[in-house]
Structures are given as C-alpha cells and as structure tokens.
Length: 312
Figure 1: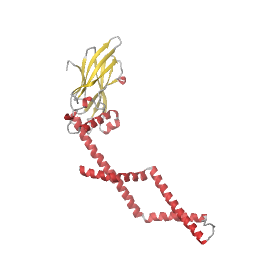
Figure 2: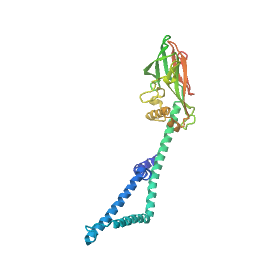
Figure 3: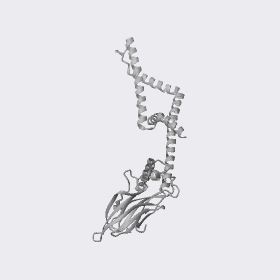
Figure 4: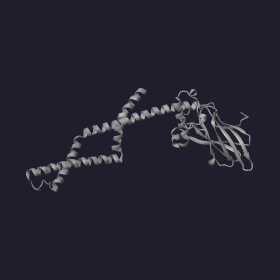
C-alpha cells in the first residue's frame, strides 16, 4: 500500500500543476476572464489577418478605395464571416472538444483523488500516533513543588518559588519561577482537554490536563500569573520523555504530536475537528502561610491535586 501511494504521489507531482491550471481557468473569475480575453485576442488576430489579406488583394488589382483600403461594410462582412467560421469549427469539432473536456476533468479528478488518499493515509497515521501518545500520558504526574517564601499580613503579599518537574530529566528543571501575588488563598488553574468522544481517545486516557496559571482570593482568574512550565518548543515539562521511554513513535514525532495536542487549547476549530467536545478549566486552591511546601499533581482521572509536601 505504501509503495502504491508513493507511486501515485510521484504521478501527482506531474499532474497537480496541470490540475491547478485547469481549476484556475475554469472555476475562478480571473481564470474565466483570462480565457475570454484570449478568445477575443484570437478573433482580433484572425480578423486583422483577413482584412489585411483583402487589402493586399485590392492593391494588386488597383481596385476601388485607393491604397488598398477595405470598405467599412466589407469589414463588417469579414468580421461576421470570421465569427461564423470559428463557431462552425467549434460545432464541427464537438467530439474533440468533449474529449478534451473529459480529459481535463479526468486530470483534475485523478489529482484530487490522489491528494485525498494521501491526506487520508497521513491522517490515519497521525491518529495512530496520537493514540499511542495518549496511552503514554495515561498516568499520574508530579507537576511542581512550591515553597512559600513569605506572607506579609500587612500587605497581604505572598512570595513563592516554583520548581517544575521535567520527566525527560526524571527530576526538577534547573529553571525556577519566583512569583509574588496578592492574597494567601492561592488557586492553581488548569486547562482540561476532554477526548472522550474523539477518535484519538485511547484506553482510559480521556482527559489531558495542563496547569498554566495561578490566581488568588485577591487576584481574579483573568489577571492570573502564567506558569512557565513549557520548554522552548512549547512542550510541557510533564509531557517530556527520555528517548528510551518513548515507544511506537520516533522522538521527533512524539514532540510534534504533543505540540499538536497543545495547539487544541488555543485553536477551537482544530480541536473540534479532532473530536474534542469540551475544553474547560479546573482550579484547586490552598490557603498558605510562610514556610509551607506544596506539591501539585495531575491524576489519571484528569483532576488537579494540591497537597502539602509532607503528606506525599
């Protein structure tokens, strides 16, 4: 099947430019106008040739009109004859015209058919890869550890330091995030993608959860502080893996598919096309004080959990 598709794609490399030209000239406004202009230019060329031929004939016999000038009414007659001849040629060659039309339709249909088949096969491969990746994400994740550095009762400012867990390193990322926020009832907000009705849903992995900001009892959700838990490629640290831990897909494909899953968060149209019916928020909160150490987990069920570090 792969070899057949490869052969068809090579064929389409030749057919597609012609198919695009056919589609342009016969289905677009600019293309149709271009064809009409070409037809008019052809008619004018033939008409000019006929009139010049008649003019030369007058010169040769020294006929009326002096200088070989063709009378106006004769020009009208020549124009009518040229148009009728072109029309009769088209009528007499209807079988050839039909054959050309059928051939053009065949070229376009063949090109579009190969393209559709190629897209279908690529989409099926992508679905297979996404299913595999969802299986690999079907587990409990440690997202981050938070140290509450200070809480000022007078100003109601909470200072914290967050360390994010990097599953490719099997440990915490070297980069930390220091946050200062008003209030001490701290909310950790997450985006949940529900795959329950999607064709890429696999096993028990129905939800993908991504914590992405914090807010508080004093700072509204819309003005929350973004969490820096993604790498330079936009892959969340909790979804990163060592190459030896990635199976059924190549590491670069794994990264590409994770990026695609993340794109569903901001592209609702793309998410709907993937069968994701719902994208919603899930926030958990904890009242904190200076010296607290917290751990954030994502559960297999798609929930977000926050506990004091000593409990875990």
